[in-house]
Length: 456
Image (cartoon, rainbow, N blue to C red; front, side):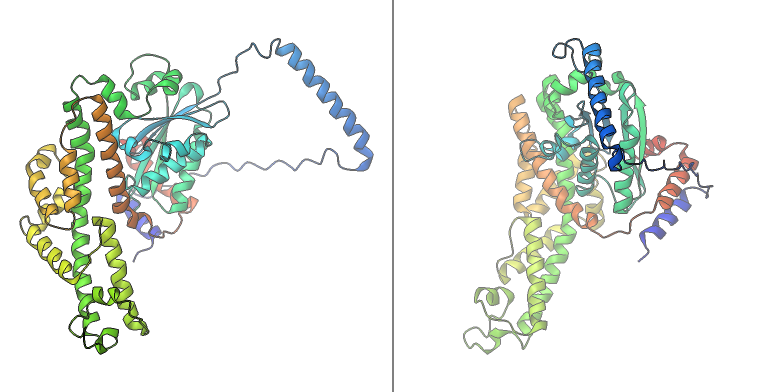
């Protein structure tokens, strides 16, 4: 397999011709200051200086702050819009701690969640840089960032309070380099009015809005909707439920492989001379994996134990995907037959295309057919849940309750689907490799922002 560095270089070479690397100026480190209290001879002098400093501080407080409890604190907070596909705005307080996080679309609601155990709750109060990097990492875990392709995210700051933008960007870049993801970070300074417009507001004070507005995108959308059913269809059915069904379709291939391998392993277990049930007169015709597990036979042979352990692992993965384990040889055969029969109703190529659901009309046309396939496989409960989710709520309260259930299911499905790619060990990207990626993108697109826009 090609190393990640070689794959990255090949992908970059295809985008643009090589360019000269940009070398920044090296800033000399200042000479280390001598200790102020170094040497016993300076001890008295040190104390006198400290006392003088204290007096000066008191004088400054009296002169510059005539009424300490009357003067409002200076607002040094900043806010950052982080766009991956999940889009959210992070607002910091005067100490640089995360004070509020406002979702800008449904994907951000899925990512951040709601309630005491949600990602949003865990990020509040964290240093803003740390919160944003954690948000990015969670997006990667849920598959919003593909670790195997060259891509970009965008971080924008309001231009009146953008001093920390370079620091936030650097931390995001360091995260991607450490993970071995060729994901670049575009940055921008926008006006407070422009950032407010990202929240769907045309006027008002950005900072007041971020501190007081409903943080869920779904809640703000419901407040402004004249037709809840239409909103649900557009934002939820054609958005998150489409994603949920896509994840289910993608899992069919894996489920099919799991069932085929379990069948093969089960036959090897039945035929093995090392099977403890081989010597039992009562169980000589029932030597399958499930009978063996139910009788709690001791397994001493390492090779035979490996067969059983591998089957355990496959059954556990099946449970993750389908909600329950295969409980018998008869059930394995039945589920395998149903899956093969159901999948024959639609060509495999069509099913793979449906995993993308490129249009809403495709979704509507194939929805019943795909639900039927899922109902006839181990994903029956999953199919019933999706079918129930498509029914429109009647009012704003039921809308939010249903959306919460949908988003929770989408989050779980995304974690299951993206975990294998996220968990693959990757070689960290060097500063030079990352800089080369940036330079080639700049040569091709002119700016990282243009590259980001091209990938939307």
